[in-house]
Length: 83
Image (cartoon, rainbow, N blue to C red; front, side, top):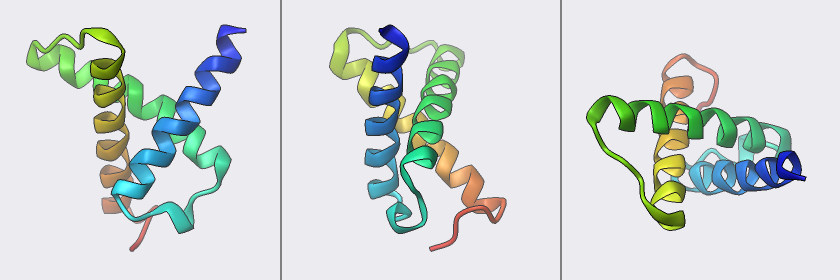
């Protein structure tokens, strides 16, 4: 059950990040889930390097979205997503 919840939350995180970065038209539901999950991992890794600890559900969600936005930015610079 937790795997399904992770996929749903990953999809929401990826969708929010794609709206922020204006790449929503280029991404489908699978890409949103993958960006959300990968971006969450990236966000928590970067936060750990910076010594920031996300507390509470809202803090974790914001770190996840920030990581997903960073991942979309990196993929955009690599030519994966174009505006």
